Length: 393
Image 1 (cartoon, one colour):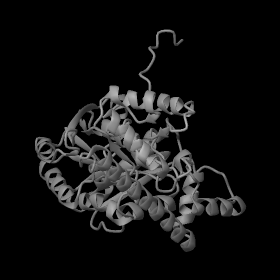
Image 2 (cartoon, rainbow, N blue to C red):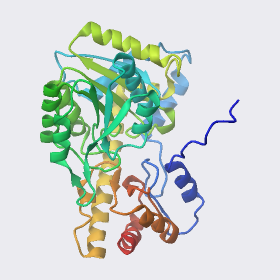
Image 3 (cartoon, helix red, strand yellow):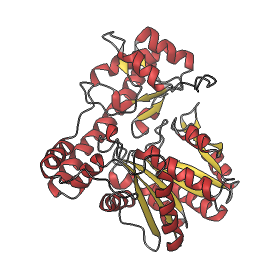
Image 4 (cartoon, helix red, strand yellow):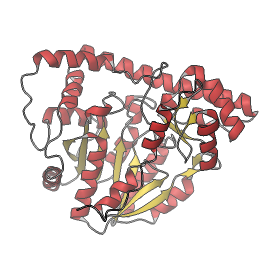
């Protein structure tokens, strides 16, 4: 049956995760997989999540299927959270999905069904799943300029110039906040300009939001999406609860469609559910129940807000301390961008060979493209990490 199947290209992160887990050197610094870790190196279950689980264990009355659109209350809560109750005179409809990756896959499948000749534009670089997802669906894929690797700044003029050349047969995938893998943060001016171009040129914006609340704040991290939604006629949003609720393995997410024609959006929402049927049929409910309970229980919502704020502040602190340590080690401000970036990731200006040397000779694990997960760093490893980077890169 499967004798002629070629071996697929391996996911870079998984082998490195395994390699790091089997490395028992005391100085090891594992910055590979994109999860939040505390200073002990653990990925904790949030207290609000733990309390919600306790409540649901006693009070949940059923494990029956939810409908094909998911739990409507959960979807409404995530819509309110993502859009911050700001959007008027537009129609937004969503469905519950198994994580943000599934949400994006369904959105792209819907685009393929509605407009099979569309080209999907992703940033250079972008999240490792973006390109393979678009290609697997059979959509054309191109890259728009984003990171200047020499300066670690945004290629602003090239980015805007590329967007100005697009049209109705193009869809542009944008990171809502905390860009993965660069950590670059688009400001309000950037978002406003992109929205104006999108409305003028007619390309379709897709926003991928996976880190709301882990950049600047819940409201600030939503500003890009809100600016886009207020200015353009149509857009799509894929949303993940993996990072900001710490529900990585529960696979909790939503796919949203926004438009100015109510009937069109209702049909498109039903099509999303239809496309989910041969894949997962209905979304898993456990994680969604946890999120719903937290967001509808004032004391748990306050507890979660505080925990999320602590996580965000810790990441900001790690960035600032590593940037300062690198200033000391290199005698330059070459790495100041680390403190200026937001979210979990930044990209070191190292070659694949240099990243390999860091792994093999220094037990410092990042990806070949230079991506490191700052949220996986312990404070007691900052000095060693800075010395290692300075020695190799």
